[in-house]
Image (cartoon, rainbow, N blue to C red; front, side, top):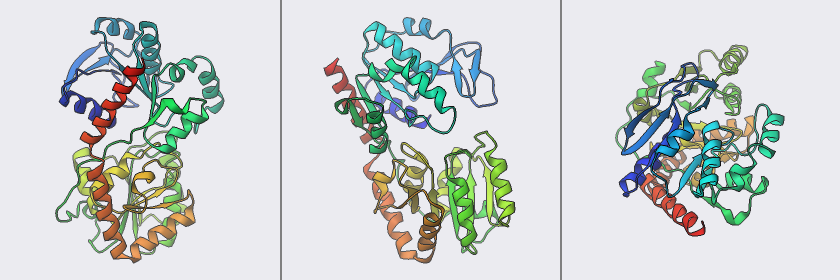
Length: 364
């Protein structure tokens, strides 16, 4: 994922040796490889482990202990995500070997959306040692840090390290998004980027479009499964919005910066995000953001680059209308968003992460 790649590459630039262990799964549809391969990426060595078994994105990498034993002993490990076979196994291996590790939950610590009873059972039994055995618990926001505290973790072992923002963009508007939609540049477009999945608040955004006469809504991103795309298409038809709500599917990552920059507003109406990297990408493009108070990135953008709203359809619609009617507010928030992106660059965030490792090692 982009966060791990940026941290790993940044640490290499600062003189560290980094090994990354991951499954060989590349998508929800593709099968995992039966062979392990090691590839360089931004100076790090990425071990794509043989993954003969899977459940959705969870890959079961049976050879992981063998490859960990063959790799030069690490000074410290960084475990990303919760209830994942690789992260769980690495954390257990580190405890057995006496290697300190930091844990970063990626917003997964509090059970959400599906199989809540099973998740709580696993958290209290098989996964109990993952959090308690970590030297430090890294949160991308105060919002996520509170999840650790609710889970019973000591406050002194939690630390907030936000994700970095892309380098701010500048230059004339490309018109890329309007061209995709077949619209002239004077037609306002509200953009959302990310998986089409539950918990993203996309149904709120579609319903909010009812009161946005003349404005279009563009949803960019892959189908996350569980029928959400089908439900949104049905909702669009029922509300008579087929001509103004567009589900564009995924775009090439290299095309996204111009798409962000061409949107009049970026909306992230999620019901829960430990951070919200797509809003950071929009901010770097100078696009004013609307984000719910359930997204960790609201802590960085509030009042400077974003309007923060509750998780509510009417509040979302009102914020969009306010921005569409106030060009000066859009300009001010866009400039503020770029300024926040410049302050929270990836090199700065990597330096914060390096200090977290030093703190963990000092306490080991």
